[in-house]
Image 1 (cartoon, helix red, strand yellow):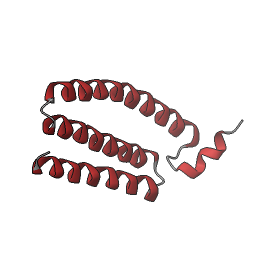
Image 2 (cartoon, one colour; image 1 turned 30 degrees about the vertical axis):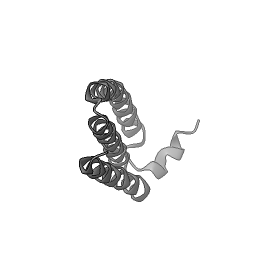
Image 3 (cartoon, helix red, strand yellow; image 1 turned 90 degrees about the vertical axis):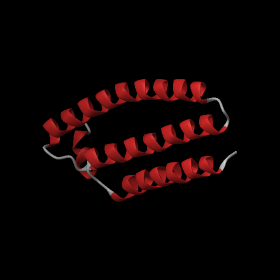
Image 4 (tube, helix red, strand yellow; image 1 turned 120 degrees about the vertical axis):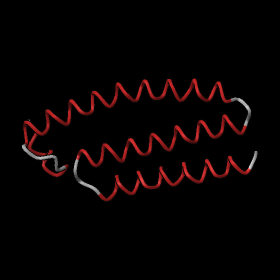
Length: 102
């Protein structure tokens, strides 16, 4: 392992920590969604950094590209759900989701 791997891990951990802080501190659905995306980017950076450190960058790139493709489909689905929630409750506050109980 080289010193650059530690740098990648440091920045990836920073992104994951910032995302977790955003998840715990916010109540807006869009901000929560952005926090989840920040965590995902930290995981992608960690995968690439580990592949670079292990001299297996092609496998790491393939994993990250697959991760991004799956993430894009999840983003589209989550945004569609957020739009429907906003149309129903006229708010993006997580506490108002209890109104959706049938």
